[in-house]
Image (cartoon, rainbow, N blue to C red; front, top):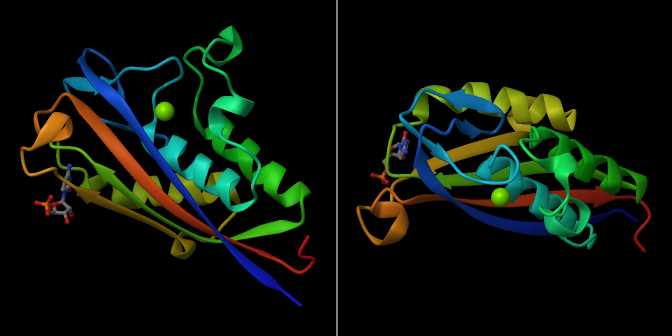
Amino acid sequence: MSEIRVGQGWDTHRLAPGRPLILGGVTVPSEFGLEGHSDADVLAHAITDAILGAAALGDIGMHFPDSDPRWKGCDSLVFLRHAKDLAEAQGYRIVNVDSTVILERPKLKDYREAMRDKIAATLGLAPGRVSVKFKTAEQMGPVGEHRSAESQALVTLATENPA
Ligand code: C5P
Ligand code: MG
């Protein structure tokens, strides 16, 4: 009997001038980017946590502590791929990914397909299984004041051998 499991992920990073804005592995032209120990790809981090959550395998900081110099400036697609590999080793396959980036500016919609393609390739999925959505925070709170970005993700996993 097959089983479906759902995982949820959330992340936030500060915006700072002169940092690259990397979302879903795609560099978006912007004067402000995200601060963090790794490349601060808030979207990749949320999806990584959603995969780990669906498989009950802990969280991103457990597998990639930000105190570890190995992960300084790291491409966060490495984390995403590792979460997929861990889930697959437990007998799960990813069914779909749905995600939202909340960022006041710049507009991201022109980069949607590039992000979907990059995330899908990293996870070995068809792009049709990966959704990336964008919202502003309507000028409210730290995201709306252009001080930070957030991302949320849901992932479903399927297994033929439920634990
Ligand atoms: O937040 P709001 O509802 O005003 O966003 C309207 C649309 O603008 C979104 O559906 C999304 O397609 C786009 N958007 C974007 N980049 C952002 C925020 C929103 O492309 N940073
Ligand atoms: Mg993060």
